[in-house]
Length: 390
Picture 1 (tube, rainbow, N blue to C red):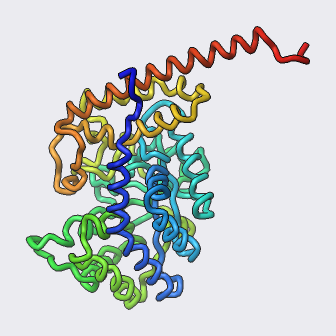
Picture 2 (cartoon, one colour; picture 1 turned 90 degrees about the vertical axis):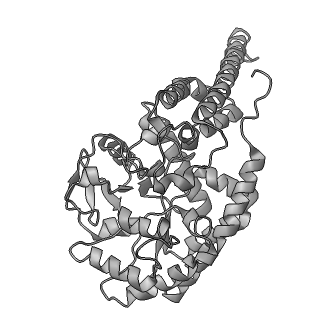
Picture 3 (cartoon, one colour; picture 1 turned 60 degrees about the vertical axis):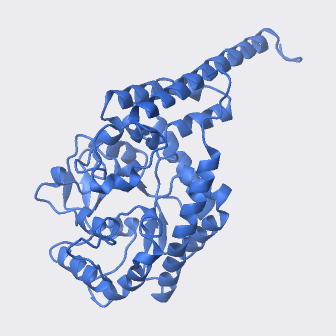
């Protein structure tokens, strides 16, 4: 502390992004082939954080090009989110709005799109967060079809924010999404092996009395979590064919769903939900005293950082907000759908907390020193005005 300020492991970041890009790149090529094969009838959307895009630009520029090729087809929608995949929406600062605006700019620069639909980190959502998103001008938002929120309702409809009905909500169908992400390679699963024909039948049954089905998945599912040997790419290749054989199906992007379908009711969600754990809440990030203390200390200095002229310190602050830092501090038990995420560089949540707080303390000292220098320089300029001034 006070000597070194290289907080981030660039070597590990580079190795990780290169590995994932190599494993998942066949998916982009497959999606492009399917779009051309079905002459634009096949569609998909992506939500990619600014952090991920920056890493791809540095270590896998060919991946950026493949996403840009997909964007050119007109069949791929890029959604907005927090630039650094943060928990900013849970703070009482304006950091959430700032990062979303920053991310929108990145979408415009890289893909020529201005997102109208937002996906918050890990699908975190509440009535209040949705109202903030509506005030920012977004038409729709994605979140989880959590059972404790829906009750008897189905996730296979369009809903609205309970405070501002202008914001439409698309809910993840957890069961059908998890059938691919969690069960596809599980040979002990009663439905293994999962074929495209069988899955298309399930989709047809799920929408028998509803209008839409939203499948939200971590992109690492395709190639990283499920290797090419599992057959996942063949499954995805034949799924559109099976669905188009059933005349009632079409693929739509989130903004097209909002434009075509009418919401059936407002959805009241007073407390934040997410797509994580059985509880579908935010306790994976803010479920113990360690996480809460780190979160509060981080956002306590937001105003000071914002007032600085230093781009490097602002960049460090934004990267320190990544939700994974808090996830590493979780002390709750992992459920099946979280096992894959349990890859922490720390031996324990307490080690993660101590390391993070040391970094944050050092960073705060840097901020205080920078503010002193900035204020001193400002006072000197006021005392010695430039020549020609009266």
